[in-house]
Length: 153
Image (cartoon, one colour):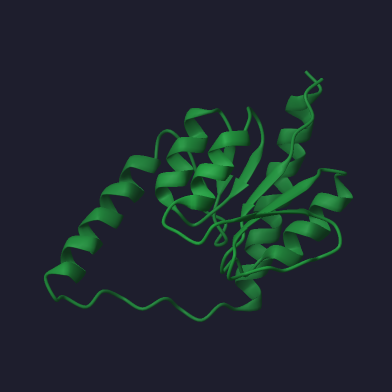
């Protein structure tokens, strides 16, 4: 039996409290990854502090992620790397990434980068609402249920 874990790209993650509460219900350990400028202690998760720098959190997460682990990130590149290691990946908006949709997200990210680089304004993010938290919680709970069941096979 493989023990699954939840790995959180925790810098600017608005759903940390939900992740901790639900993971406790399923008795799944949580490891949160921060750079040196964002240190938060929630009393449950193990905190991994990495150097401030591009992709330092990504490198730390991909170094320990395993099959059926759950990764929470809004970074499409990190999501792709974790999917290749057979992890379950979702973002804070309850979007579940898969081998079937990740390339679309990466292409969209690249197109938006090109637009911004050429001076075109891209859409601002909407303010987070309680409805968004509920959607995330339901999707995360389902993912925990599936990962827990898979670890017993």
